[in-house]
Length: 154
Image (cartoon, rainbow, N blue to C red; front, side, top):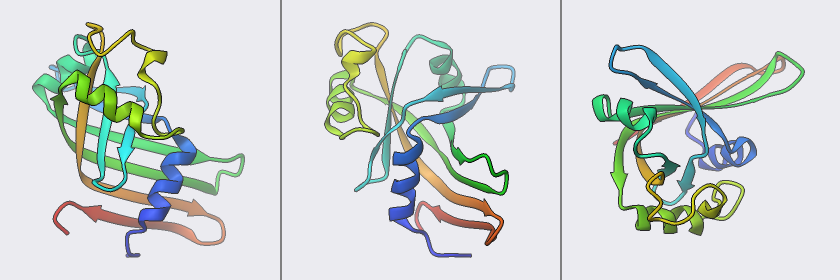
């Protein structure tokens, strides 16, 4: 297994930006949606602006874990890159989260005013994801399948 490459993690996430996010609902059914995670590269912390009263919030109240998948593909089916992130979720103060999301430069960060009126907007909340596992995976005709995994505490 290859060593974990932080620069490669950042390159892939900054290229794709949006991630498929998977949760489990109250009936143990998987749910997937597209989110715009915002990364703090120094701490590997991820913030996600979302509705604190929506389906995602209800699912996370029961199962406070989230899985993210970033996929970059091309017309060549043998050239894909993925990033998989698994971790625990907590809600943070919306004012703090607003500032964190806004402070990260694009393309990963963004101005929350694009989607919400203010940190007081009742439809605005911020999830903080603490990754427990991050996997970089790729498939190419030249190199075949490759992967590199980071685990919290390793």
